[in-house]
Amino acid sequence: MPEGITDVKQERGSTIIMSNTYITVRVENGVAVVSPNRPESLNALNAELVDELDGAFSQLAADPDVRSIVVYGEKHFAAGADIGNMVEFTPEEARAFSFSGRFSRIEACPKPVIAAIEGFALGGGMELALCCDFRIAAVNAKMGFPEINLGIFPGAGGTQRLARLIGASKAKKMIFTGAAVKGPEALEYGLVDAVADNPLEDAMKLAEELAAKPQVALSLAKQCINMADETHLQAGVEFEASNWARLFATADQKEGMRAFIEKRKPEFKGR
Ligand code: CO8
Image (cartoon, rainbow, N blue to C red; front, side, top):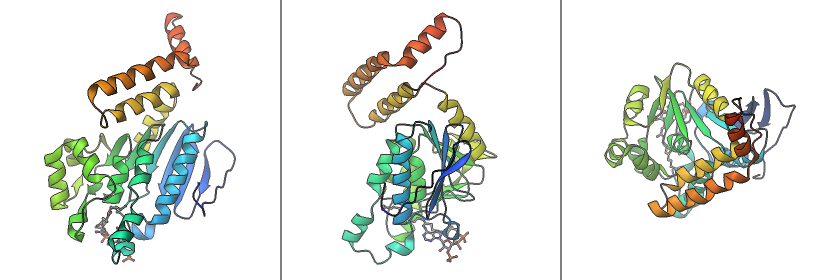
């Protein structure tokens, strides 16, 4: 865990398990809700907040009581990287500030991660949402990449992940114009998976559904799907085949198939 992060583990159930300077993490029914907490700057991402996110994700990845994760900022998801920090950066300082690597680790989290988006998800905030497996947005959520109006462009994976998700033309339109889109248009673009009156509630429902699935199979399926963006088809198919075979060493595969044959509901153990 990065230095300076306080880990306040309390009793399990519905409880805050981490309360750091800029984020809080609650766990309920096997679902962790990770929330940036800088309301005075609409949850703008400073270096410390990103460090805390990174530390929280590595801790949650290793926590057997956590089976899925929701990222949720109250009122606003995150209005981008903290501009105040960046104004006088030299290129070297900008490179050192870069949180691309930490966002890639969030994308590679072995558990399913859902972004529940209210208010602004801009710039680095939207890049964080793109590292999640699913995005559920409020009708009035405003999502976009305004960096061009600051004389820069998205630098924490945005140009890459946005183009892969919605196609190069729509990505260029969003990044070149800097214009934000609201929930329904974001859904039409394929930027979000669903629009909801209460995105946190819908994200929790999906997270709880996923928390009940066989965790090794789900985690390896995520790795295989993420690999599709990284590799040639045949290498990806090989990667899938070897990971698929590994599942036959899990108790959950035996349980899932036996339960089917015995016509009962499976009880997965996560191993
Ligand atoms: N950084 C710092 N402070 C911010 C940010 C931000 N990104 N966004 C909002 N704030 C602050 C405001 O300065 C203001 O503070 P104060 O009250 O002290 O003046 C407070 O939050 C409230 O904001 P506003 O008064 O501006 O609220 P409005 O409702 O009028 O406007 C907006 C809301 C439209 C969201 C507006 O605040 C805005 O345009 N914010 C900036 C959005 C933006 O440009 N985001 C992209 C930032 S750059 C980026 O994310 C790069 C990512 C790549 C990183 C690569 C390296 C890792």
